[in-house]
Length: 271
Length: 269
Image (cartoon, rainbow over the protein chains, first blue to last red):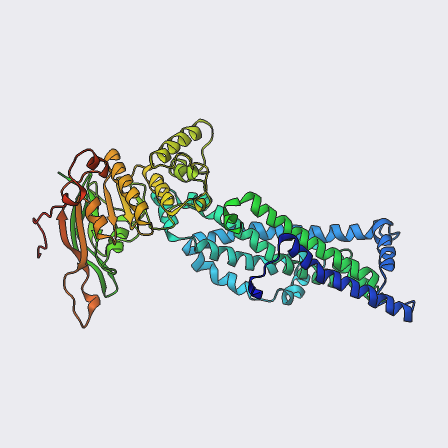
């Protein structure tokens, strides 16, 4: 049998996928043990035990300075920023992206502006945002919005504009007004694309969030990582990074499920 | 007999390229017009003009003696070769779409009694085109022929004055195509439709039409081929045909029903 025709079964695929993860884990454990055999106070590759005890302090013990459990305070702060920002992105994309996609006049008027904003590297705007909005929450949320929304808007407007002309003509011959056309023909077909765009934007959104938190903040997952970096606290940084990836994966899976449940028609060909 | 649709010296030009020239046609109510012609001879442009997707650069088009607005409206229904149905709606909702647009300006959704009435009407229409068992199925799950049945039902529920078919059966298997011919003839007769059908299949054009239009260029300038537009060079009245179902009942067979009317045939203007 040729190599290209060998396909793993469902369980086989999961097993194969687990192998590299396990390999990294085992390699880490060996390297960590080796380093600690040489130098029991090594900080670069902390043992699992060291990570558990460091995280236990952050997860279960109240920090005397802030009166909060730091891990949960960081998680809540970061998720709140991300949630508000992605909410604003979604709403503005629905509004602007739909208008741009449905109305050729709007596309001609505003399409260039959206493209111009989309090509600015958002991090380059961070100083401006800090100057304009101060060092509070607004600047951090604004960075994520500016980084993510223009991409989503362009993507959605393109997608809506590419709905086959036949469908738009058909809807009009069935008596649909511009508004009804947007509401009943364009919007439902735009939603799965918007969700797909959001899934792709989660990565950049986390980047902008952690960048903003690293520079000016008093809570947040990114803030904590950059704070403990000064003490070489790999026993906190590594679990935090793992936690961030877990949160990102959970959001991605939730959005994928939402798309499948809410817009089953768009996923027919997947099965 | 006053004409339902009148084209009076209609031209369609893009810059100095002439697509259609001097199209003069009267289309009677209840007729089934087949339109054939080589590729690029303006068949689809003609359909777009009648549909209102484009405005003629000269001349006028009258529907029911009123000038046609150059915008698609519910008085003209259409079925394209592809993409005629909404992929995000079930068959039933696809057919209800026209009722929902007419019944609810703002939400384009009906509720309560109005919704049930629309659902019943749509279900009856779907049963009529043979999709009575597929009310809650999405178009992607339907075969090509069934999607075209759905598209026809969706167009008919809006009760259009003219039904425009743009190569509606071009992508279907020959066997399915025969079924669709029977369906469209039955609907044409029962609903008293006026149909304009563009097709590449000459046999189909003769079989279905009561009148056949052939679009092509009357003259060609070899140095500037774009300077002469196409028009209806043949305009044949076909003898009213019989349904294949009637054939079984002893009526004359399909192949003999075509007679060519020579009046106005190949006439120079």
